[in-house]
Length: 199
Image (cartoon, rainbow, N blue to C red; front, side, top):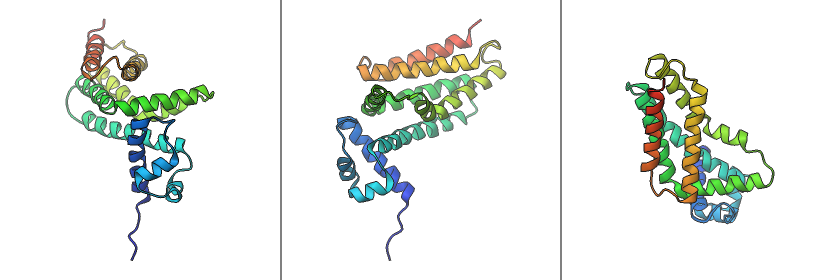
């Protein structure tokens, strides 16, 4: 009797293998044949799961962002003060970005290529980061309600500023101006400390 294939699991495995491939040689240099070979499947099988290289890249990005959201959800669920949890979430995201620096570079290359063709990436990027952004906004709201942050802060603006720092971190990875997560983590801690004492 043939073993039943878990299609969601197979799709995730292909996306993970493709992520490594994109990290090693860049999005433009990867072909569907290379993706199939790295995943140990035929092109026919690959086409059952993905219609294009772009679809594979989108799935690889989702794999990383889902892992980040899972890790952050665990940190959010603790009983520590909200500002402490916020700092830990920011540090966890930064560590994941640096741990996957080659993939961050490949994603940047991919997005830049799409922008060059006139594609509007605003919605796609927002969709991929909405889970983490929601966690950050929730922690800020919770900290404000509990008096850990000043009552007059505007949560959406602070959330946008924190997200902009993630974008800055990604750019520093792409430009290789920072080799590890230490300086980025210090910046996040400084931002959180600053908003905690903001008058």
